[in-house]
Image: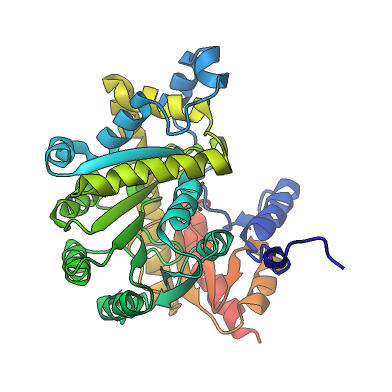
Length: 412
Ligand code: PLP
């Protein structure tokens, strides 16, 4: 007999990303020629975890208090200001004038997603998730007494806005509220990135569905926002559309310090709530502070102060942006190399624009995974696809991989 409570009996982390990532890391330690294309972290061309100098300098300047004292649960004023400045950029004043905004510090984007599921889904309500997704969403839903439905991510090589609309209408009917999760840009695992036109259409759909008072919560998982090939301007220009949403809508941005500042293990991120209705944002601050206190009490003070110190200091921030530009350009070259080579050898990928991952449709991913391991290549088999992490491999590896994967897919 198990001692677990009823709901916990079925709990099992089925994600193979961490496990297969650890195997790949071990193999690479023994043999540096191993290609580790598993875990979503950014590595340099010579195989080292990338850290940003500007962030390291800020770390060295932190006092003991700034590093080790307890942080406040929602995070400091400086952290909030830094995140608003970073995320809204040239539209900061516009946002402050036209919307209400509230920030809640969380342990990574993960904490932001978990809190949002806790507070905007009733028991057994469903979150609306993309058909290809970062699998953790499902666990966040279950842990917060909810479940999920999926919308078809693609219609050909475009976003399937029709299916998003249909599923939102269905949820409106069945549960009287909608919690839609959009992971953009650089969607994990496909690398799909929405156009400004698609964002505009999505905003219209959300306004239509919520026009009669139906609450719509848009959870915008923007973990990879600063690695979009189009740069800061295009991504912020999309966010700007949130000022047009009606009063029944709340946007929650899930910000990840792991990806933007390469602070993966420091566990710092945030929920950034935006609404044209003050009450939505006040309620957000109250309930999410409660949940944070109940789940993790507060985030690392070190992570929160690092973000504030890098972003609120003009010189450090300028240097950090330069470093990010450099990292992004390398990632873009890796992606271009991989896709060009894939096209050359006839390896099909799901619609890709940019980001840490490329995804390949595959009928027998587990078998292909094993074949590739024999060739010292580690990728992630998931569902009916193979996920290749291009953020962790070199441009040369990106050139080599498509042909080897294509061959491995033929071998059964
Ligand atoms: N969202 C997506 C799509 C991710 O891939 C990840 C991490 O891999 C996260 C959110 C959250 O990362 P973290 O909790 O480290 O910020």
